[in-house]
Image 1 (cartoon, rainbow, N blue to C red):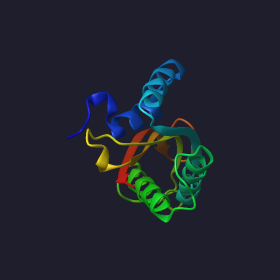
Image 2: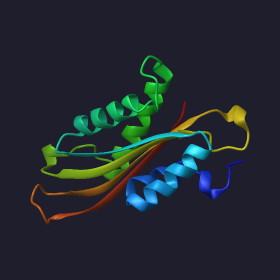
Image 3: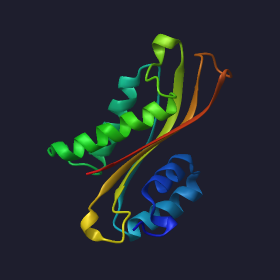
Image 4: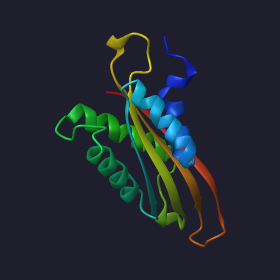
Length: 149
């Protein structure tokens, strides 16, 4: 069974990606209280590979995943791809379709279940803008990917 709504991994990842500084501090305090790991960052690109690389680099540098463990990197990769697919409405293509993104991202790792034996899960949230590479011609977008480790 899932823990209460305040410890839902996808919800926290989305809120963290969308939060202002004050909201971020509150969320980070809650995550820290429960021993969860997280990182946040920004990326803008017309190349989906750069988005994947930025998120993976941030997760490794902030200790959210251990880059020497294949299962952790594999779970992160699939969470990122799932989030990018949601953000791009299923077509993981940016520059080739003449669109660009400006995103904030978060990666959250923890156990969202009451039973500790369920183990850790990882969520990647993307929030920002997508559109033609002309300032002012973009719209909001969001993506979420969740995987077990």
